[in-house]
Length: 267
Length: 149
Image (spheres, chains in turn red, green):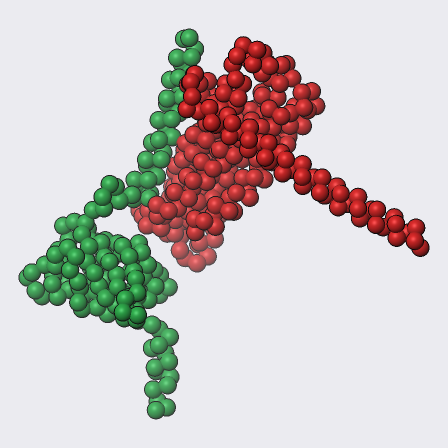
């Protein structure tokens, strides 16, 4: 009897102990990541400028993600037009199709789907690249040459994602609205004037601002999380692989959680 | 170096594309008022705003001629609206403003009907003749309970 009690207590203790350890580990990582990222960002206004590396990152992350963003945006707009038409036709209000497609893409799908694509395309490569730099001791080599790896490696990537994501999301929005127009107007026969007129009438500046703020925040988050996960990866092959997986998962979940918080501000 | 030049140029094209997308969204879809809003403002006092909000349309003869800038409570039981009317639209001094509904369940908007006066309202003046929103529930209850009294 008393033996069972002790067992029960100790298993509860193990449970809570494990929970506490995970929580503290998570908070530690959050603090460490924020400090690392902020340290890198604090170097933004100090010489030597990292203009060239910033451009190279903008090329790798921004231009590199352009095709996938256009494809995703195109099919999102098309399927929204198709689904929206099917639903709206039941109420005889197909003329609202433009407003529906535009509203969903600008407020929600553009930033979130765009961010997911960029996490998959660019975020994972950031983590893997920095992780391998750690494994092959390239960051230590940089330090030996009196080059601060936070300035050279982390800063350009964080700034590049913060700037590239809003640009990519805007392209996503325009492409999505355009393909929605093609499906809705050209294929399903919605009035072409009604599509654009309803879109313009129903979407206000606050909707667009909400989308851009989301995109900027997501971009910043992707940069911070993916660079941190790479920089602090265990310098082994498995460590880098694990860090890359974790970076994608954490960034994706973070985007979804942040999306809800930001949406509640921009309603 | 040659390759870096090419990368620079591609990035330039990418940034340009993104900015064009932003500009199109802001100007065409968002209809940003631009620097300094255009048009002029009038005020109007209603007993009941009936769901007209900031940004609701102002229409004359079924054409959008402006947007509602602000709706606020005055004198504890009146709704005062600030109406921003597009430049070039002249509204006579005895014009009539009413709260209407687009269709049966559509958005509320402000309808302005011209009066007979030759003189036009200047910026900042008030439209004195107003008609509040027609409340269907009030009408029904009036109809139901009118026989009992």
